Length: 524
Image 1: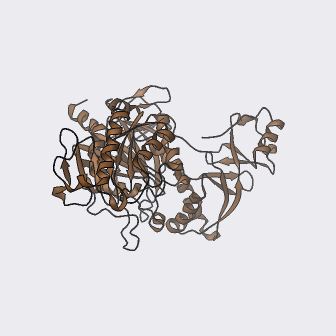
Image 2: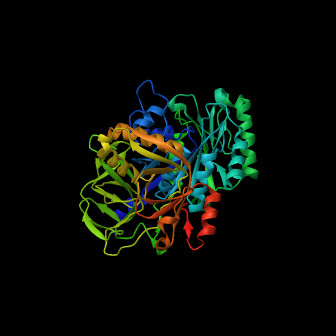
Image 3: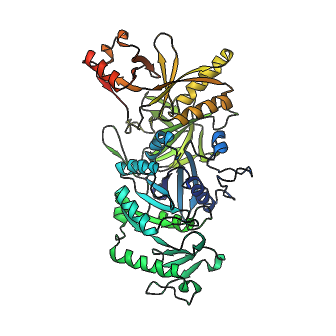
């Protein structure tokens, strides 16, 4: 491998932003893009009346509701690094998309609302990162509003998440009395409301304000200095090794909305965030980023990013080597080889053709139906399959039909394309061939209905059939259609596999007692 290619790979930083809804995740993404020079003006998700929407929220329903319901990918250069950000949906109904996205990153930035602390969805996503050993960097947001005491937030981080925390900086005041942050790592104070040339105040060798500054008279400054003394004496030691192992999270305080503390966070993050990491194959061998041969995996498929062209994009995380447009690749699942001529990189909905990309990068490949989520593509002669991506067992089900039977062609095409994205799952009854959709959360059905109308011009009728327990069958050859009944409906999934939809736990136990030889299993 050439030294230039090695340098390029080691300059990559690829991370996902995770949080509970409304913690400020999309706003944070905008500000990072602003510092990276990728956008001139950071749009805020709150600014609906101005018609200025967040760059990373491109889908119509996101603009209407001011929420993210799909993962966005953005890329920019900063301080000698190439940064790939994946802004994930915070809403729990879209956690499957988020989980898969977390398989494609090397670290995560966790945004926490200073007033609310650790919330349910944050905890859920943290556990996924922890399970995979992904390093986590924490940004405690909204310091320009009144919130919990900083020491209380650090304690909550450690107790609820079970991870050690190290405060990289510390707030001086909060809300209307927010003066700024004491930057422990860079040994300076960053002032909140001030001119740019006065933003940073130096500290003396004792870690105090070196000048006879007005701030020294404030009780908030005194409180911050007392807290820092406590952290120095009783807090965790800083350890880069523990950060990389995911055992310690560096904590930053700031306000994404007012753009305060974001640049300091970004610069420090880039120093300590991991470079592209190896990935495991199904054979449990490691593929290293500096391996010569190109390899990558599809972690997301998105239909209609450009509705005018009805396009589909397969999002690929490059694991090793270098991608070059026009190169021949092999799709491991089908063992078919083909030339990749259309490839793209992203700034949310803005895209440009990419000729070259390296391990750590996220690229989009135009897809005519070749790819599935979890597919491995390789550029060399040796083929292998990366670890499976998580797929959830749906809990909610609806029967879906087109309101206008004349639009059945558009109806079936829309369903086929949206199902391939992986947010909703498709089932068909055996004889009547009714279409049933399954999802983890109700909002996924609302998004599906909205997109069918806006992107395929088809209005759908959705009839809820309630909660079901979906179970797949290990020994399909032993299944008989007569086993299907009112409380255990037998259907096909989109791959033609048998699936039982049980009414409840009791119905499943009753079925098992009657058919002890049938081996059932669920997804995650």
